[in-house]
Image 1: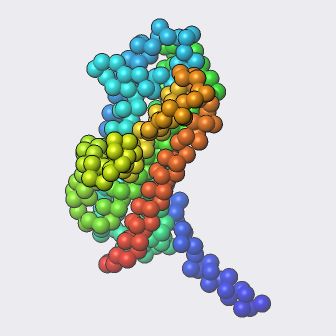
Image 2 (image 1 turned 180 degrees about the horizontal axis):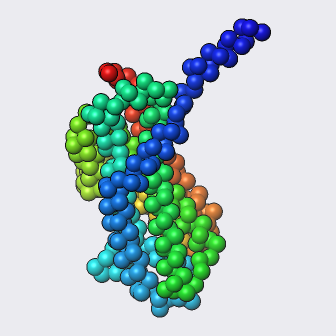
Image 3 (image 1 turned 90 degrees about the vertical axis):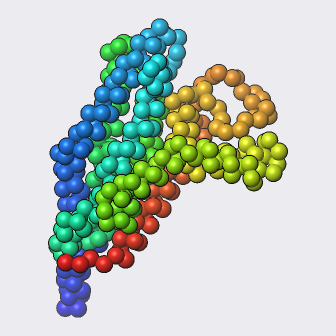
Length: 321
């Protein structure tokens, strides 16, 4: 009996690897919400989103009563000179995620507070995961606010409530956007662990983002031209496969399938696939969900992979007082 009590006492004294996790999460969220950096980002996102949604609502007002997915058009309709709401999100959400993560770890080194934090009953596991979750929860609050704004604009300017399927599609789009932002957040945290200077980690994070956002389509064409030996169809298939390494491509195809219900396939479409299909008719929600399931799995797998890599590197680093 005494041996069991001794083991329980030792276990309580050592604690769990995630001891102090929610303390870190709450503290980091308070820093994010109260910081001038996040206020500027939220202001920029809200300003651009409101402008895009308002112009989209004015452009599609004539289609009310004719389109069963009129609320979804608020996300995808673009009007000159403003792009669509989805285009803004694809550009601004990675910037917000990188901004929240590029100095999450190395700033603790530079302020000489990391050893003090880890001297408390807070493990490295809890510190790293807590910082990631705090930034992810901050982005969740921002995205949920934007979603409510879109629904509110639809009610005020168009005068119609969203249907149940529109709510489901837009909520899954919200989750996909969160997974997409999680990739750039953990990439920024990875460079924050590798490099001790915040400026270096920020430049490295933005360089990776620019690679996939701007130059990946060029690189994809070059690689497919070298290895696509099966004619034009083989080259196109190889180019599509390589392009899906980019999270931007995966997120773009998820957006297309969710917010445009008429989308029946992603990538190359053969005539045999269209037999029996009524072109222009919307695809049921569950079928659209099955269509994007591999893409969504790829986004989550990328987040887990980069988090595991960041965790291993951070665990192997020496913390000096």
